Image 1 (tube, helix red, strand yellow):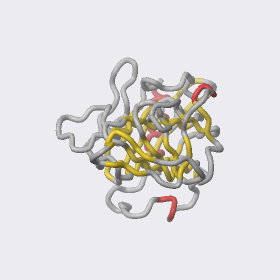
Image 2 (tube, one colour):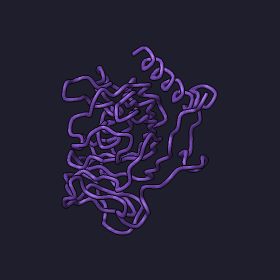
Image 3 (cartoon, helix red, strand yellow):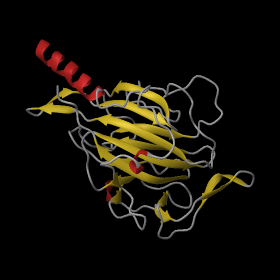
Image 4 (cartoon, rainbow, N blue to C red):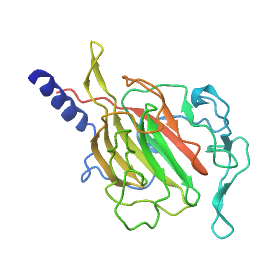
Length: 255
C-alpha cells in the first residue's frame, strides 16, 4: 500500500513538471498551436469529418465560415449559415446531440475557442467523462460554483471544482480554454492513479489547478474510465460555436 501511494505521488510530481511555470513561462497573445510543435487540429476547416454524434445518432451541428451575435434584438441566439468553414455551431436552435471525436486520446493538452449566446451553457468532456464547464458567467459577482465557466462540473455524488475566478467574457465574444489533462493510470488492469485536471486557463487566466477527478461528471458518456477516451462537446443547452480545436499529447517527465 505504501509503495502504491509513493508511486502515485511520484506520478503527480512527474506530470506537474510538464506544466509551464506560471511566472517564468507566462505568455499571452496568439494561441499555442501557432508557436509550439505537436498540436493536432480536430477541425479540418471544411466539414465535420472526425466527429460523430453521441450514441451515433443524428445531430444538427454544422460548419460555417462566420458566426455573429446581436446584442439588442436576439441576444439568446447565434447566426450562421451552414457551409465549408473553420467554425462549428450546434444547430439553428442550439439544442442538439453532443458531438464526439472519432479519435481517442490519453493524457493531453487541449486548446479551443468558443462563443456563447446570452445565457448559453455547454461543456467540454475530457475522455467523454469529465466536464469542463462552458457557461455564460459574464458579469456575475457572487460566489462561483462548479457550474460557472471554467468549473469542473459536479459528479452524481456532488463535488466538482468551482473556477478560482470569473474570467468569462461577454456573450458574442470569442473566448479560449486551455486544458492540461492527466488520464487515469493503470497497471495490470487496476487503476493506480485517478485522472486529474492539472490546469485550466480560461481566457489565459488560471481557473483550475491540480484537481483530482473521483468519478465521471453528470451527463457524461456511458464509458468506463480508461487510459484513453474521446473529447465531447455538449450541444443541447443553448447556442454555442467552437473554433480552433487543437490537441497535443502530454507525457510525464522521467526522473
